[in-house]
Image (cartoon, rainbow, N blue to C red; front, top):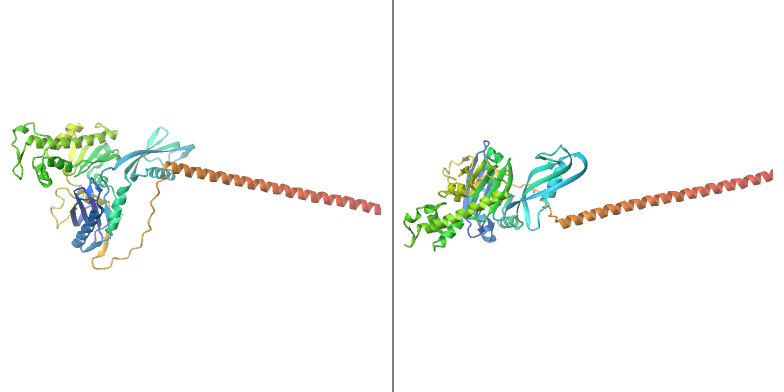
Length: 470
């Protein structure tokens, strides 16, 4: 979308600590011009990336929309909403086609296999996105199989799945707030696309986004997503551990930023106790021990996900690329090296997208808007509904595309059995019709023969009478 005052994109990120809304225009050179932005705290209604209070979430959406509209003096007709949160992960799936003879693989065959894969989801989970991996044709692996001769094709897919209620919860809240959703891109993939370089994705790397209540891990190799998982642990867990020392949340956050370290100082006993606001003291080694233990747990969970991806350090040459608020902690690089054995680590504070924001020179200096900006960059549809106070321009209603029903294996077998029975019944009916037709032809032939025989008899006797008369 080219930048005009009536042509902009709006994106909303549903974070566990805050909901962020941003409006902007894409420039011809790839930069994004920031028009407006707004944030609302979300700790009371979003838990580990999942909505747990519909009313509060609905009110938050209304507030964000009103703030953006007030700043721009333009109405917002629709928004892009990032999807993520606890429970989102990838599941591998295989679809096989056995052919009677060697034939050329067509795009229709590949599309049919992709459709079968999309229908393989369980009732309790949605496939948010499907990433084709490779296709095995005989003994060779191909990423572009169309046009190749084969008598057997095996498609490998990586499905990003989440609980079936996740998308519906988001849609319900936005529907209640009278805000249309343009699309639901996956937040961690939008971030990865704007942070990772081509060589990193090609040579293999691990993208880690350390959020407030979740840590997202995505493994890439040969330019493809190979594994994704959202771990239900984040920087808020560190705060809760500190709060176990009878410290309030805001003070715990302050102390974490001031004293927290991913690796406790070996000479911790030499440090003075930490003085709290109420005059109490906490032993420095006790405080640092809590922080280090939780960071170690998060990193070991990241390492587990790397292992589950079936790629090792030697194959992931691009190393670790880490972003998110918790990644700013002191000595966290040393902790990652110690616990994952990766030597190559790159920490990212900002996206590679240039921003045009003359009115907000310090906007996103700390990277807290990265996810919302990445989602905005994914947008293609104009979100402007016209000037405030003027009627919104009428748009032709887009026909609703019905969601494809999820077909279970039992349902698929039942449909196949019904189809087989239908074909068999049609064949039997056709056979009966042919038999009846043959019987009718034979009956007609017999009738004609009788007529012919009668004619000959009549002619014979007529001849005898004529001879007698003569």
